[in-house]
Image 1 (cartoon, rainbow, N blue to C red):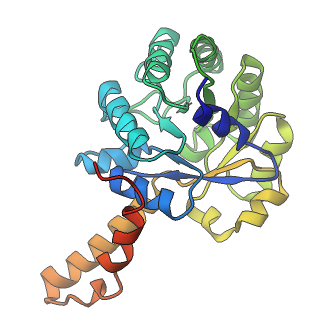
Image 2: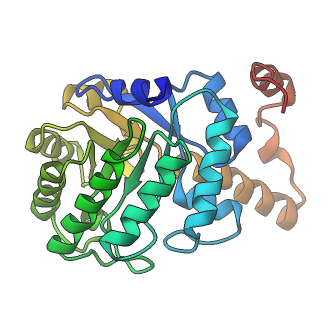
Length: 274
């Protein structure tokens, strides 16, 4: 059992949230680690953007796992992979994905209940069967492995908060280690989620949830705060703003406040050269 996996599980303390820093390449992973991240995660959307593709079902299992291993090897921190719906609808598909992720030495994964590439959720029964299969595969792994089960319907408007809570309670009963309902509406809804289960809860720092501070999440019992693709999207926002200004107006000033190599280089130098 790897020390990284053990340390990753130990980070999940309700009421003492840590930031799970979602990176999109080796450089961003190393930069986040150098700035104090305690664990790194992939983001399916951010990874898809690096490949010039949209999010939601446009990256293969093999591509996602290869990407996760690259980020895992970039820093000494634990690495959790966003593996969308497990790259298949059946419980067997999900189990295969978990087995491969564990064999590759990842410290955890996140599996959602959406039938990609659509935004429609799996039925309650199928969603639970998929997590049961994932849990069985995770427990069969040689090392400790943190399995996060996501209920995405509130985010997509396909079911309500009550259904999301019903699902994560079933996922917890199935053995999931961490539970996750992305952007459930507001902080009160997030608090309801934390109270509804005993396992650690992940909250997503995105949308109106970006207005809350770490202490706000701690107060309601959140154990982990992930960034999803928010940091990658902020980076792309700068590219869009700067690109529009220079290509349409010949104006380069949007880039004047960008961080220079004199700041980033020393941070990246803290890692051994490849």
